[in-house]
Amino acid sequence: MPQKNILPFTKMQAQGNDFIVLNGLDHELPECSHEFVRTITERRYGIGCDQLLILTASNDADAHMRIFNNDGTEAANCGNGLRCVGSLLLESLNKASVSIALNDRIVTAKKTDNGIAVEMGAAQITNQTDAHVDVEIGNPHSVFFEAVESFPENRNIEIVTGQVADHVYIDIIERGAGRTSACGSGACATAAAIWHVEEHTRPQTIEMPGGKVLVSGSPDNLILEGSVETVFIGEYQL
Image (cartoon, rainbow, N blue to C red; front, side, top):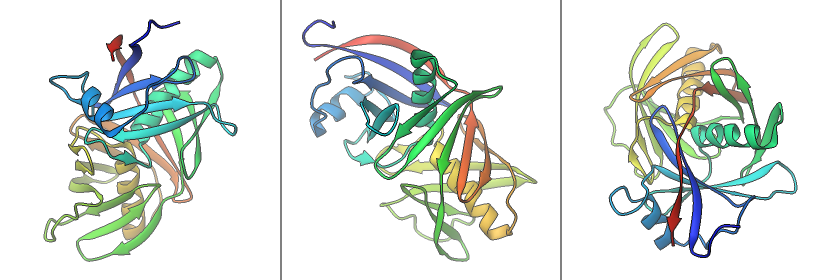
């Protein structure tokens, strides 16, 4: 049993998108108040990360995952976080695939030759202009092909900076976290937007500042695949 006021954690990253994982399946967790989230995710005075991931028991899946941005707000989906948590659960449960429950969907994760693949579920196109496409994939994204409109502050932003055939380059501004090195659900939203605009569904390599992932499948069930890494494990003093 962990000592009182000592909180075990795992620091992970996927394409530079970094996470603190707190595993409530193995030990008791503190209340995830706004103050607690802001403190533990702060890079100078806490551990530091883009998002805090909280694992708890689920009746319908191997675990339930909550996602908190480093500004203290809660997010609905996180593709890279799902792949990191999937990697942890695959190892700890010794299973060929694992299921992870979010508030609006259950996704599955498995190992591949390229790292960890997660079936992300469906993406919906909700709006389109000449400059951007709005995509919902559990959380809201706006994929911009031209930066001629103001970026909404209440959505995650992906900016397509280049495309060579099926290799797409993007920059990211995450709602609640700011500019990040990578965003898994943003990569999926980008692929879904391109499929919609070009009316052609096929695998896309999405390259972000921190690295690249492969998005395949269909708008009804996108598959996000790429490498993940455990950076270190430690104990946080409450």
